Image 1 (tube, helix red, strand yellow):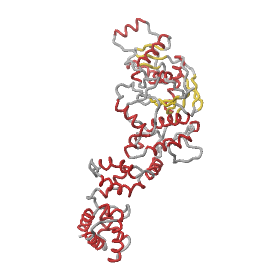
Image 2 (cartoon, one colour):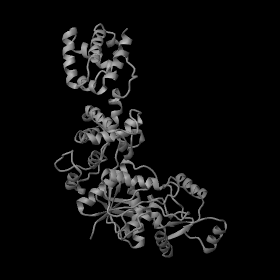
Image 3 (tube, helix red, strand yellow):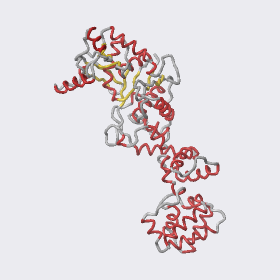
Image 4 (tube, rainbow, N blue to C red):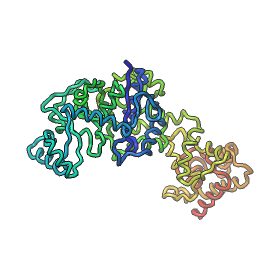
Length: 485
């Protein structure tokens, strides 16, 4: 029997890190087990779903390197692959359950449902539906319809039944039906199916054999198993991956920083770094190697080795990995990734000609190996684009030192006499000036560095100075000399 897994996101917003890790585990399972991966769009939330968010789902998955075998853009024999295009199918199975006495129409108002919940809490019970509409007569239903009430459809949850299943990650799980909140809505009053109903119908008709999702869905599983049984469907194998935690060991959320995959893409994290990093959240290869290519991860991946402990999203480890992949990348790739950030900062215009691009390659190469993510370049390379930087107190103190004026004045004179400012020429110039004016070491180099960059550290001066160019060098030296005088 062919193995089939699915990733089924809702197009209601950006993809959370936890969801993209779920997609990755489904992908790794499919590629390591020879299974098919199906992309299904669960867009029954009409008020929040949008085509723009659907396009974003495709974009983020493709960016990360996750390919699917069937989906809205790759039709197969089990489509359509958007839930909004499958409403007639859900309606058919909901009517089947009603006819067999396993579901019924519910006409309760929100106020009546709130009252049920309040009374449950007063009794010290788990909030649950009272079942008031389970045994309505035909006349009562007709009266509710005359009142303009639009019914939902509820599935009957049996009382005090233990539902158990074997989870590929968590082991055997048992949940009592009395904790599930009573008879559950499977079709809302607007005609849209609820998650737990639609997913059972879809997974069955799409021949899904393994459902891999986050452990926050564990309490959905017994509800779904009851629907599987009621419809006479064979349930798939379930696997609930542990949730990703923040550094404080609470569920990863906005308070921990960026939580959406797109935020990392936009900051200049590389897809191969994110693929590598996310694959190691709850799994590790037998050889404990951490830096691996996509193909190596697929080759080593074993779903049975996923552990149930909740992993921590370690941004420092991600930065370390991303720095490695940046170092391994061609300079042109990093320059191209940096262009949007440099444009956003106003450092460069929209059009970059060949000469400007070649100059940018030299600038980016000075910082490339030290970048944790490409967006850092905006601050690290600021010295090449911004002239009106402010001197801090340490810089001012250095520039006002007894040697600074002599150093900068002599340096300016030599630069003025240079026809072309080259790295080799600057190297010789700096050696010669130290001997000529009798100032060496920090006392010599720091006034020049501060005057030209406004910073106390950075790439070597012999590499910075030629890239600044003669005009910019003289302007910045003049600014520093004005401060001194």
